[in-house]
Image (cartoon, rainbow, N blue to C red; front, top):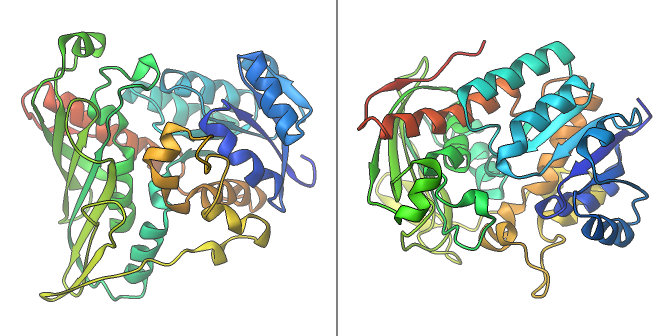
Length: 367
């Protein structure tokens, strides 16, 4: 390994957002990019001054100069590419979700254990400024004892790449699940989920999932806590939202109803809106600006995930920083491979429950 962590980014749509972050991180070298479409590969490479370029993922993995691979490819590729990169001796960061089956989550864990390299699912919702704000309230004791948690992710996916069409809502549940489990400091143990409504037959046929909305109740392992999660992807009218609410005995936090509003803090029955601060101060100086700006922040250059997600709450530099520093400091990342699997399997098991009319499903224990 060189003095800096040499990073290769795979997938240059949303993935491009991370290029300048790695270029300006004091412990990272933005070494290589990988994209099947050579025109886009060269366009991005020329724009950011990256010389090492691959149109083949397999060929890229043969490059011994690469220490870490950041995967931003389509969901169906996440498991196989993560496993291949770990087997090739690379640290892996992968956008959500980890996989779409329990077995593939298990295979990724096995590959990580055999390789000894880090695996981190790059979950934006546990590094947003809102999450960091509530985490600080929890850590300072101001929240008090958490009593219940609720999360939602509602998004209209029409116009996205074809593999999204008809995707079971809970197969992409980590944005709603992760902040709840992270704040509780627990894993999901079992779930009961109901599907509601119906999407068009042409959408439902692709994955065999008919529901417009899936809503789940989870019990948290080794805890008296429960949490509620709601997901929708198609044919449900709602402004985009990735929200979480936390109810505790001293203070509670509720996400704002509409974009542009401020969230609400409750102390007893008293309520006030709060302006959530930015947390760029937690980052190295060279990447602090990326909590507020990025590649997709101009009117003529907008990626749907960035536009709909409103910049993902300034999370991108925090994610990259955590991934790089976990390697530098020779420690597990947050989330690590086990936590990533639990957050992902929460949704997978919830969908299984919904397809069986709410039958309770236990999540696997991976360690």
